Length: 451
Image (tube, rainbow, N blue to C red; front, side, top):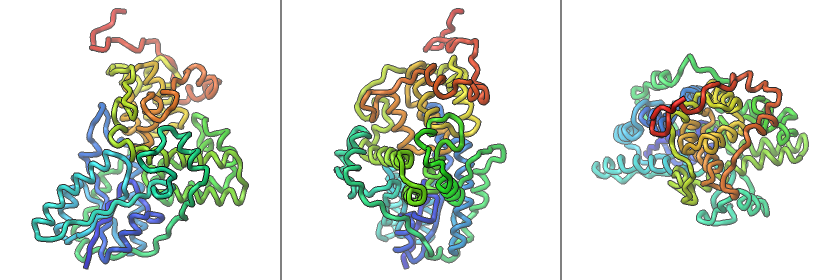
C-alpha cells in the first residue's frame, strides 16, 4: 500500500491545486504536511529576516483555513515545527513513505532546498533496502504550461514586451480550475504524531493586525466581491493610486501564498467580461497576470542570477552599501516625505501599492545609491504578498540589471508626489513629513561627518 506526503508551501489551497490532485490520484494513503521551519523563516540575509510578522500572521490564518477545509474531506493537516528535512525524514521512516509531492517553482533558492531534502532522505531509504522516494514537483504557479509557450525555456525573451507580443499572437488555451472532491485517508495512527495546534499557535501574533485575511475562503471572497462590482471596468485608470483599497484588485497576497491560483483569477475575469463587458481595463488585469507569469518563467531560465548583484545581464550597478542610509530608508527617515510615508505604511501594514513600491525602490537605488538586494530583502521581510520571483525580478528591473530594456528606472520623486499626492493627504496620513536632519551623520565607513 503506497503512502505519500504532500508538502504544502506557497500553494495553501485545496481547489485547483494540481500537485495535490496528482498526489490524491496516485496515493492510497496521504499525509498533508506543512512545516514551520524557523531556521528558514528567521534566516537573515542583507540584515533582514526571510519572513516578517505580517506575512507570518497571514500564513497562520491561511493554514487555519486550510486545516478546516481538509477536515471536510475527512483528512487532517499536519503542521510541524522544526527543520523540514528532519520532519520529512521522521515521517518517511515511521510511515514508510515512498512518494513526496510538492509544487515546483522557478525560484532557485526553493529548488536548492528541495534538492537538499532529497539528499537527506535518499540514504535513509537506500540504507533500509528500499527504493528511493519518488519526488514529484508539479508546476502550477502560472497560467500556462511550459509546453504551451511559443519558445523554449532557454529562449524566454529578456524583456516582457517581447514575451507578451509572442504570446498574444495566439494566446494558448488556459485550463479551467480543477475541483477536488475527495482525498485518500491519512495513515493509521497518524493522530499521535501531530502537535499541529501548538505549532500553528507559534505563528500567531495577537499584536499583528491586517486588512488582509489569510486563506482561500477570504481570497475567493475578494475575487467574487471585486468582479461582481464595476471596479474592474476602471482598473487601468485607478491602479496607480497610492492608498485606496478599491483602486486595484488586491489579489496579490492570496496569489503569493497560493490561496488562489492564477487560473482562478483568470476565469473569474472572463466571467466578469461576459457579464459586464471587455475593455482596456479588464485587459490590463490579464496583462498583470502575464507579467506575473513572465517573472516565473524568467526565473526558471536565469536561476541563481535572480539573486545576483549583477542580475541577469552581469552588469554591475554603480551602487554600494551605506548602513545608516539603509536603516533610515527602512524606518522612513529620509529627506523625501513621500518615501517616508510609503515606508511607514509598509512597516505598519505589510502592504503598499505597486506604484509606491516603484517609487521607494527607485529612491533606494538612485537617490540613496544603495545595493538593490538590501531593498529586495527588506521587501521580502515586510510584504504580506511577497512572491520571490516577482519581488526580486521587479527590484532587478528598477536597478537596471533585469528585464528593463531601458536599463533601469529613476522616478522623479517630486513629480511622483505631484501626480499621486498633490494635496499631501497620503503623506499626512502616514506621517511622511520631511526631517530636518541630513540623510548622513557618518560616511560610508562610519566616520562622523562634520556639521
